[in-house]
Length: 272
Image (cartoon, rainbow, N blue to C red; front, side, top):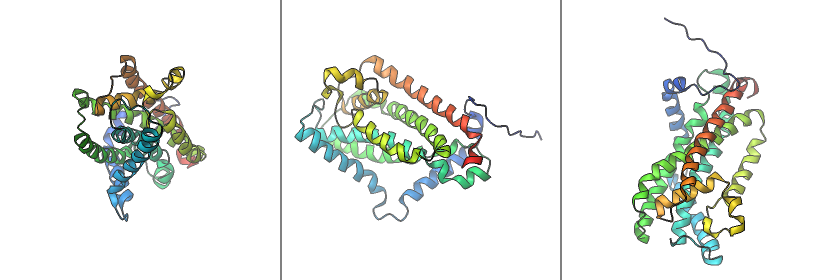
């Protein structure tokens, strides 16, 4: 039997794809545990997945739609903000759950050998489940408001993949940094809160004054939000450069995050 040699990752090594695939059962168990723990001993359980975006969409529709009277691309503002919040919640929840995952599992990380990257990666399973439940309600709202997004709705899985890959890349980097710098747990929620309003989530890109549009359009999350709304709401199609840029940004962010994770992995057991 050929021996298995365990070596530390290099400073800029790529993720061990073969090891991750061989340990996929571990990732499944981590994801299953995360889902069970989230809803165990809760009074209304999975209904929280619907209550939170519904409440936020209602507030956004009242403040930005009724009071500020911002444009929503001809879509009812409540539906516009609900679908936008689904995409944003997929991003922010993935980042916020992946970031503390290594610290929360420090006993396993320090004593058991397995690909450490599986810990933050597995948190995406619960956020995808939340998105799926929320999207089903979104489909009901589309029928109620009689909004037909057309053929772009077929691209929804692509946008989920793009947004999810971006979030996982940031989550991987944040989880590695949090092992060494616990300040990340305090800074990250604030950064996500600022990003929520700096990204066209509660409002459309068209609502941004022309002189400020270049500032907002340097944010790849803005491209992804416009693309997702185009797919689910039938709003105006974003420029081709934004569609291509969204995919490129997702790939770059994911691999940069994975590289940062690999760089710090060699010291996890000592620092955690």
